[in-house]
Length: 288
Image 1 (cartoon, rainbow, N blue to C red):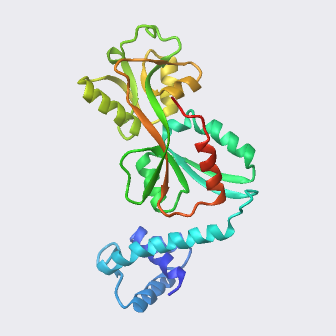
Image 2 (image 1 turned 180 degrees about the horizontal axis):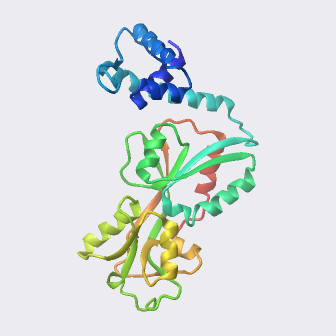
Image 3 (image 1 turned 90 degrees about the vertical axis):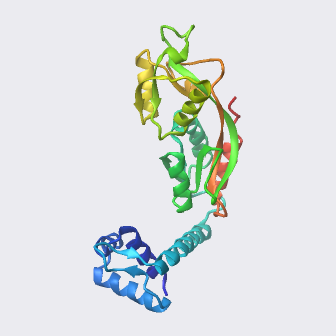
């Protein structure tokens, strides 16, 4: 059995079609079929059910693929470890964060990281926390920035700082000094965002129904809407302080706090670049 056999099987399992899998692997379909047959013969069991319109895994195939994915992740981590540059003169970091952090935390943080380690390249993604955890589990990320709470069994969570949510209005909001926020029309993130779930939980506890005039799936869009309209929103207080033309409004009872956290896959190898980033973000001043 060779490593390519595992890669070929995983591609067929993902695409559920020999033609599409062969195209993704840049091999011919007969070559792919032959390699899968060789793997099945070496294991002594059929791994694929070819009887339907699309290819599916047999019970044996499902069991094997689960461990094959883990083995491939470990092999790729081993390759990165072997080529890791301990002096940080070069390297690569794969990072993702939930959307609110892109508006106030990540810019200054990565500016410092780049000044300290200019030879390190970064891949940065903005994802929901569920997608961050899935990407960590598939070894597509080195580290994520999200929140404490419930996580998958393979995810390790390290608390960073407490983040305070706040009502946010434009700097020239006509009622900014006497805002009764639940009486105001709001623009909120849609329900796929952790921030929105915190807001909805707060409203349920208070027994109120907010007046939602707009919903969006973009932090930058919400910021521009609040800057240019009388609408209010709910976002981290630190974001309002970092963004020009916004103002945080204190309400009673206060909106919930939440704890920002580093997310990683349990047992995953941390490169020198990843360790340097973790050290830098942990040295950040905490957010009150």
